[in-house]
Image (cartoon, rainbow, N blue to C red; front, top):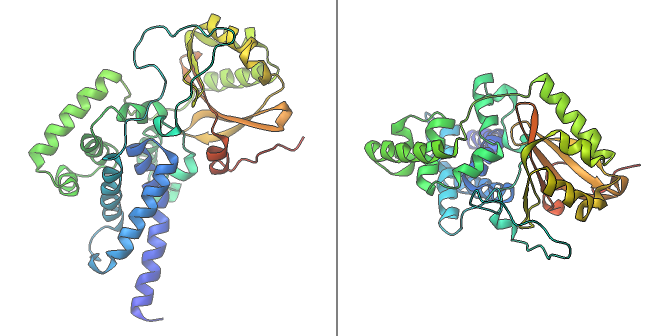
Length: 327
C-alpha cells in the first residue's frame, strides 16, 4: 500500500472514530438529531476536500470540531430557535377542552432527543470526567437553554466550557479576537445563569431509579391516580409536535383519562437518551403501535416532567427500536 493510501485509510478511520463526539457537538449547536447528522456529514465532506491542507502535527479532533462548528454556524444563519415546550412564559396554559383541536408545529421548531450512542464517544475515547461533562451537556434542558444564545455565543461557550478549547483556540475557530471571545462568553454565561441549566455531572440515585420504575409500572397498567401521585404538584406534560403543555395533577389526570385513554395497554421500553435522562420507547396497543419517545425529568423524589415526542418515523430508527414489539 502506498504512503498516500495508508494516510487516506488512517484519515478515514479517524473521521469515523470522531463521528459520535462530532454528532454530540452539532446536536448541542442545532438542537436536532437529524440536523446534527447532516452537519457531521457536511463537516466530513469539507474535511475530505481539505485533506491536503491538514497538518499532521495538528490534532485531528480539534480540526474536525472547528470544521463542524462552522458548518453549524452556516446552518443556524438560516434557521430559527428551537423550543423545548410550547409556552415561552410562566403563565398557566389554557385547560384543554373537550373537542378542542390541538395545533401542531413543524419538527424544525422543537428541540429533539438524541440517542446517547449517537452523541457520546466510546468510553475508551474519553476519560470519565470528560465523558460525564459530555453526557450532561446533551440533556434536553441544557440544549434548549443553548437555543437562547446567538449562534456565535453558543459556539464560544461550547468550545471552551464543554470541549475544553483554550480561549485562543476558540477565538481562532470563530475568527474572533480573544477579548471579543471573552466578552461573548460573559454574555452567554449570564443568559444561561438566568435559566439555570448548569452542566453538573449527575446520575439518578437508587431512590430515583426506583421512582422511575414505579412510574413505568403505573403507566403500563394505566393507573392514572398512582401515576400522578409520583409527579410533582407542578409537573408538566407535553407532546411535540402538538402545541400542548399541561401543568399540575388535575390537568394531567383529565388529559390522560380522556384524550390519552388510548395509552391504556401501553408498553414502555427503556432507551438511552440525552445523557442518561430516563427515556422510553412508548408502544400502544400492547406493543403493536409505535407511539413516542418519552423523556422524564426527575428532581428530588418526584417526576417533574413527561415529554412525549410523537415523530416515531424519525426517532425510532435512530434509537434502534422496531415499529412493532413481538407479543
